[in-house]
Image (tube, rainbow, N blue to C red; front, side, top):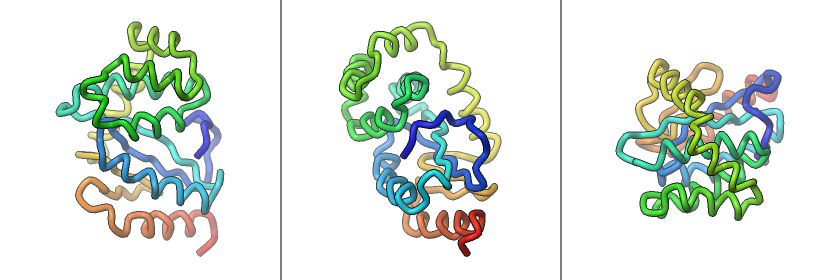
Length: 173
């Protein structure tokens, strides 16, 4: 996975990964994302989109922290590290997010400041609103070429469906 800002020049194949960083199903989906990155490299632009769920109190601050991590150039390593500790996030909260930032080499103090000043709230709010508008109801959800694939209920076969669409978009079909 790469740390390219999510608004880079358009790739012919963009996969939006609608995620909630306190979601264990999203953590399980990382294996598929890694496999897709290995298969397509930078030809498939995987973009993290935030859809924090009300049932997870730390999901929203985690999304804000992930945005700061992308700003600092280590968005995917931070995202994966947070997802790997999804269960701890409920009790660890902001302290855990700052600790993870330190562990992946981010400016943890700046990440902490970003959480306090709310500089990434608009991005998270915009993602959530867009997700609702296109019918996202849970996580993980994927969108590729306008096709929404819901992984919250059953992730079986999703990678294959994403690969079919990506292959067509990239002229590999």
